[in-house]
Image 1: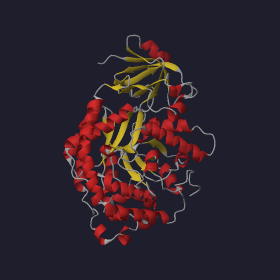
Image 2: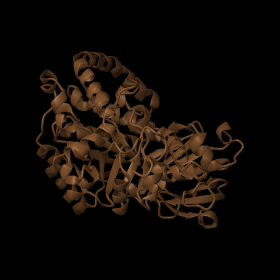
Image 3: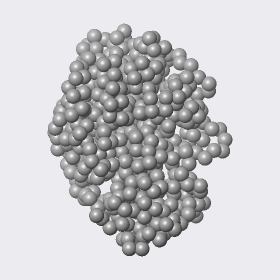
Image 4: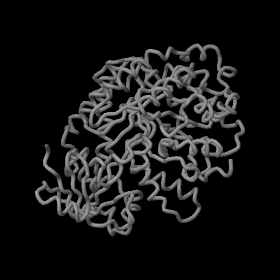
Length: 502
């Protein structure tokens, strides 16, 4: 049994607290990885505990990165100004030769390490394997265990032909381009592997989610499998919905049986419930948002990646008003380019303020989305994302003498709008100190960086070859994107308001 730990003398920024601007000075007591008391009770019961001096520090819950992908971490900084489908033609694992297991292990460690040094203690990693590849999956699992974050792993699955996921593709693309696109796939091997790995992804820090890639990429059989397994095991279902304008056009063209709605399509196949987490949700109408909220569903909002991939602004306040749970994510490291929820919180708060058109507590909304909202979306409500007794002791401690915090007028606003992670001093995961005085305790960041740099040359050469080989496809996809942008829709998510009444 480990010795209790008293986090002594810090300011507790409790997302459920009464004052997030001037949070109170209070102790926090940890036993067996769990918060057991705060305030005077913690002081009274923590007399014989080991002490972590938190004087001059802000104590916040560790952040929850509710939507990310580790599979393209080594492509960070390679792309700019590309819409989703064009970017995916170069960044998705299906475009590349099979990666060595050692590279999969490396990129996953790098992804998790970046989360940790930004105060993220829980990450949802939606990983695309190259086929039903057990060895790659084991490399991902072991890498997360090595870094030591709380990770929810989902093996991303899709089985629909690419041509059926793009509006106007069959009628517009030339035969030589159509011949290069992947066709329908058998989902059974991936489904079997995901089931086999449910018991492998277990333990104090590892859990599973189900990850059908997107409604337009999944057959009814695949979606119904996910719905049934989710019901049976109580697992969250994480998927991409209405990320792009083109997807909204596709829904209206190709899904008439569901009223041109991906939300209704998911509902018809048993997925519209409190375990559903839709990522992005940019090009969505108000009736669909209301339907999602009525079912208790969640949005994993990725504001930075939405801008970087030219997708626009999700109507986040409309989601909140409709009862949809709001979480925050960072998305791919070659799309948003950083596993950094400070950036996501700031963008989310700015979106909120623009959509409100007046004074509202936007920073509080963003902070709660990055903590309590992510926890609830991923089935971890009451376990992570908070500072109340019963929560696991996942904490981020900030040095309030850093210029970002001086003077301390509002802790929550300065956390969201001013803090670049520079003042992060300590991170605790399940009560253990994973970052002490700004340095990881479980791995050597210099060695990890050297390992990644050693791979960079070969990857850059492969990417150059891929760019050359796929140049015709890139031109064709950009043409489809332009046609989708010209197709009329009843709302505009390139505007920064909440899209009016549609």
